Length: 329
Image (cartoon, rainbow, N blue to C red; front, side):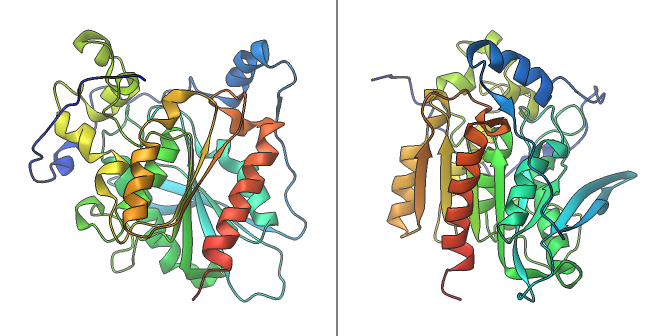
């Protein structure tokens, strides 16, 4: 059993809004790419291949749509709508990329978006501001604005506004889980993008995303190491400097009766399981459905690659079918 000291905090009122200003460095970080990740992964897993599913026949693609603006900065998303068929509307899924809250881009979720469209979902890869541009909580504010925008434009894209899910990978998984645990929590809404519409999600798929920032792997071994952690760069300070933000941004902190059902899809790396069992206990206490899928012998970014991509999509579609398509209305 791994043991570590607990950090017990008395939280002040939510102060995240004070963080949402751009740090001094604003150059885009392009270090996290699927290609560079593949080169690393294939050293240990030479059989791994980048997943490249084709666009489903008849699907409609809308690219580079502006969903919100912060000053002159326009935030964009893409929408893929299933081929015309028997349904007047479809459930929707926003897809949130990873990259340590610092790098990555929405194109990295496009393979999974295509698969979800083939399963009967409107798929929405979305961008959000990263830490070189804006600190926490800018990202969660952006994503809630994106969901409000989808509801405001639901008729255009045949979206059922009562059935919207958030899916994220790695850092995106943490953000998806935070979306799902802060439904109707005004403190996380932000001030931009389609006011008057709900930002609530009805299901969450967290693929290897952090659930609790109060663990040794997230904190860092000491105060020096802590400053270089991806989370520290996102929060603008280590847990020793801004402890309340590390608790505030942990999805486990906010589980309550309005939390959405959650699927946890995990690699075989222990680090990305921390906090999951605690969160499941909290979900159970409120009678909220969850399920866990651990894909054996997998690296952290398994979702980019076959043979694991297919399993990830199968688990995801089955969970969403259960919680969105087939759930009581």
